[in-house]
Length: 146
View 1 (cartoon, rainbow, N blue to C red):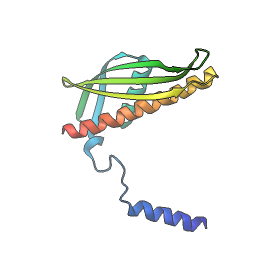
View 2: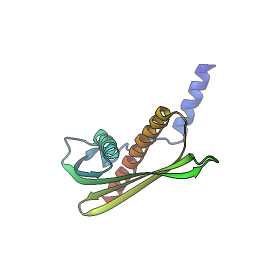
View 3: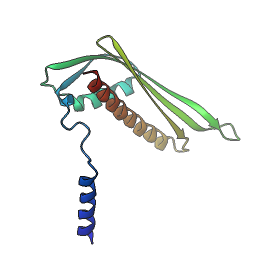
């Protein structure tokens, strides 16, 4: 039963035309170097780490980037006792590449969790996901600039 299911899933993956996002693209020939960072330190480090993963250090195509990130957390709703029940987390990342400003923004509504450690861990996961999403958008934008 498991073998049949595995073969069926494999058949559908090949049949749907799935390919990796950056397969056969020239994106692997880039080296993205962050020359200056300002704004939120945590988000800057996360975005920088994400970009270093996809950068090819041996490439001749170097992009020198200035990064400015803005992180905000706003109360969106409160319960009857006046305690915040929902927050909106917003990340704005501005990249200055060869005097061209590229801006990406991510937003997410977070429900307040009573356990502060669990709340912080959840927000850290959201920040990592935002950094990954911003990396994907930047790579797509760099491909379109060619």
